[in-house]
Amino acid sequence: MICYLRLIIILKEIYMLKIISSVFLILLLIPFSQAFSVESTDNPSTLSVSLSNDTPFVYQDSDGYTVVVGIIENNNSLTSIDNVRIQVSFFDDFDSHPLEVVVGNSTLQVIPSDGKSPYVIRSQTPNPDITKASVSPKITFDSSGGKETGLVVYSSEVSWDDSFRFSGVLQNSGAPNSNTNVYLAFYDSFEPPRILSVSTIELGNVESNTEVTFEINEKINVNSKGFLIFAESNVFNSNVVDITLPSQQSLTKLVTISDVAVKDSFGNNLSEIELGSIVNIESKTWVQFAADQPTNETPYTYYVQIKESGKLPYVEYIGTYDGRFIGTGLQSQTIDWIPKNSGLFFIETFVWDRNNVPISDKGQFVLIHVK
Image (cartoon, rainbow, N blue to C red; front, side):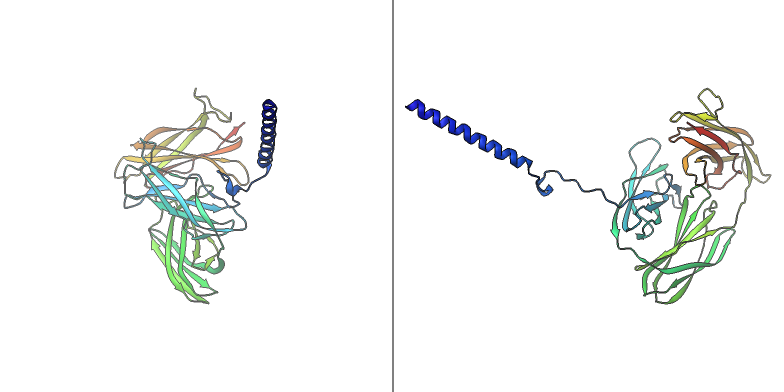
């Protein structure tokens, strides 16, 4: 009798375990809210920004600070963005760890949909050890309600010799404005152009339905080809006007670029190369000084720009070679290139001094096919 009762108890326990297991399995199949999950993943944002040019312009100002200038793009066609934060790391030639990391803002407070804005970020200290800078691809921003185009800017006078002189007019056809600024973004002849500097004219409060004149007189980068003028206030932004500068050139020496060629590691000339292979872009330069040249030594920077052939060419690569002319004569330069895209490309070469003044005409074009 006792054995029979024990058997009944064991069978009941087995039956209860089956019920509990079935309930647990059903619970596992029920989709719970992510709010109770240990890990949660946000949906990818439809907002995105990008750097208009992977090679921003970097220079040292008169106070010894390193300055990084570039363009940031809002790639969303429907939504404006604001509070754009851009991180720049400053390095020397010896350490992979940055000497400084600086976070700055775009020039425009609000970048409209499918719009662009320059940015200017300066090192924290005038550190002579800084030789290069890198812009972080991780750029933060917020969505914005945007600003109406209630301001209009146009030029009334432009002249450029030893200094840049400009006069313009801002029209406000809407409500009163505060914190109104006019910006001049100077660009060079690269394709796409690089922003070399941004000048700000502070107008402050602007009454409704009024015109305000403004002017500027300052030194600008001698490589400036033109400038974009635009304005922004607390409530409005403006149109963008593109103004080409008259050419200016005052060379004290003449450098001629010749014999530009693409070669392999054995020195053989190439007209077609494999994707991902390492090639050398070589050229020769001949320097001839003017009679009144105060010194026979000239530091220079040799630039190679490689662009895709087409109606809307993009820049595949920009390389630099720093050298020094001692007296007159023939020198050669070599820059390595690893092509990242296939297609037909053309190579342009330039020589500038260390003040970013062109000291040569552009070298001859060289076509190269990457397969």
